[in-house]
Length: 504
Image (cartoon, rainbow, N blue to C red; front, side, top):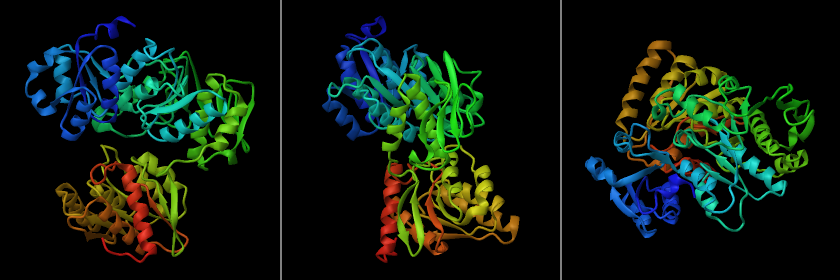
């Protein structure tokens, strides 16, 4: 065991956050001989941590007593805590080291606490991370390698490391910008930055800090960048990987993977190896093909044969809430892309369809929607908006798509949204004289109930042959437990249309 882990034996360690990633640190830290304390505001989550043997303390009481931090040799933070969170600011001011759960995972793995160190293949980017990670996992399995998909995808890396059967020798690790920010030591065998668009700017404090966090994936033996993305494609000069290659939807140059006719081709790790056919890739379309090329690049970086790339991509199937069809009603197709939690992700779904009634809204997290709205405006038959930042999207529609009818679902529970939509009504008419913004009251409605209203309104705007698309361009936590609940609520509301249900 290395010195930095050894020094934790018999020392107090504070875990900030009692969620999934925080809970996953308790037993490994205990295995290292540390005395673990977990802090959070969620009493139920703290009780679950106490059941695992941790001491617990309320977050507010700890922040109010800075002297209480002095007992801790280390703070392990969950990714939801930004650098300027009061707890972490005070820890840093007291010269207490701060690691993320991924930093802890990396150090434990390098120290071979749970057996020989694994090979890490890291996937990051604004969009497409989960699809790419699952494609990569399918390819690794097709190659006969013991692997597991973990990280931001749901299974904590620490849980993957501690699992004995089956042992995973290769980790397909999805990492968010939050996780990378708190994991400066990670040096993956190969890592990819798929794309970069405005997202989580409120957490990072600006786009440059966000980019810098993503660059943490390009620090190992092989770095991979999405060449078609304006920002990611320019990271070659900033990559700290020993070798950096790229992927493109065009014909690949030397050192690239790309597409030649109907074939996915590797010219980075071979002279010209055929990896798969375009129609082998699910989901179809540009986004799915980009993700497949990225997954193939990571696999090829560790000498996975082309035949396994082919077999893995053929076996892969898209996960739920990622542009998943949920059915047709009266000739209108309904698509659940609740995972599109930022404008860049929503763009792919909107551009993949000719005529769309768009259901959007939630927490924009500092991202702007004007460019997206201007680009997709010709495809929109209507828009139905809900959530805290519905007003911002309505204003963008008024500026760039004044011909599109807009419905705002107002639950009456969020003062910020109500104020914004009120301003939008006036701004829209003043700017165009013709814009249609209609507010529908759903007072006191929870997220699922508001979604039923939104789907009912979208159905009224849609014509046969068109698509009602849930692609929120925003996070879900203002109204839902997560994007999955938002997607399930959408599917349930569509089923209600079939049964004739119209009540909120």
